[in-house]
Every structure is written in structure tokens, then in C-alpha cells.
Amino acid sequence: MTDKTSPASSAASASPSSSTPPVCAVVGVGPGNGASLARRFAAEGYAVALLARRPDTTTTLAASLPAARAYACDVADPASVSAAFASIRRDLGEIDVLIYNAGSGLFGTVDDITLADFEASWRVNALGALLASEAWSFEVEARPFAESW
Image (cartoon, rainbow, N blue to C red; front, side, top):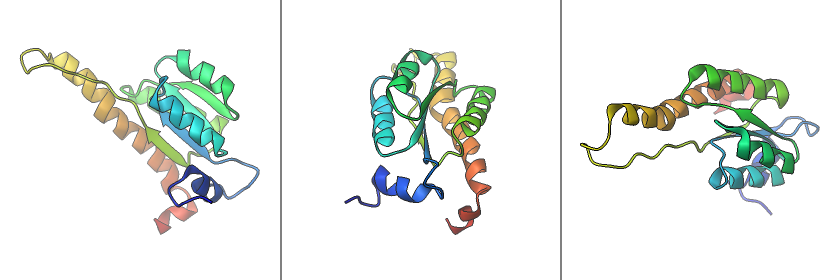
């Protein structure tokens, strides 16, 4: 039995065709939360797109999961986000679930933090989330069921 918040209940309703699995994109995959989220959605029948700046973790993880692919993506770079999402659509299909897990920590006092460091962190934490959401929302808005949301 699944509840409305589980990946299994979402997988059953996300894809109109039973032959094509729903797609989950995990942005910011490392060895911790991102990998765990990817494993969970893969176990529930999703094709999983694994996005990270460096392919070391994602390539290995993709090889261990059914219907998973690794994509290089620097979320602070609009062209990189656009290219990654275009590749996902081409390879796996439209994205049904987007998980934004990318993050950049910045700790220190006002005197310790440089403007360059602050901007770099902001680009990952805020701009990257916006770019990924925009890339995905344009996909969703084009679907016939989007008006019912």
C-alpha cells in the first residue's frame, strides 16, 4: 500500500504510458542525499537523470541503477542547465519529478566572506534552483494536464 506522497503512487500516475517509465531528475547528486533520492526513485520504477558538476559519483551510480543516466551540469551556468535538460528530454523523455539538491555552503563572519565567495554560493543555491525550475516548468506547462494544476 502506498500513500499519496510516496514515489510509488506518483510513478503510477505520472506516466500516461505503462511502457515508458516516469522520469525523475535529481539535480546535485553526490554520495549522500542525492544518491539516496536517486536510488529510491529508481526502486519505484522511475528513469532517473543524475545531474552533477563532476561525473565521478553520477557515472558509477548510473551504472548501478536501471534506466539511469548521468549528466554533467553546472547549475550556476544557464547554458549548462539548458543543455542538460535538453539531453534528458532527448534520452529519457519529459521530466515528471524534479528534485533540486545542489547546494554550496558558505560560513564565516561578514568580515571573512568575500563578495566573490558569496556570489558563487548564491549562484548554486538560488540561481541554480531558478534555472532548473524554469527549464522544467516550461516542459510541464506544455503538457495537456498542466492546466488542471
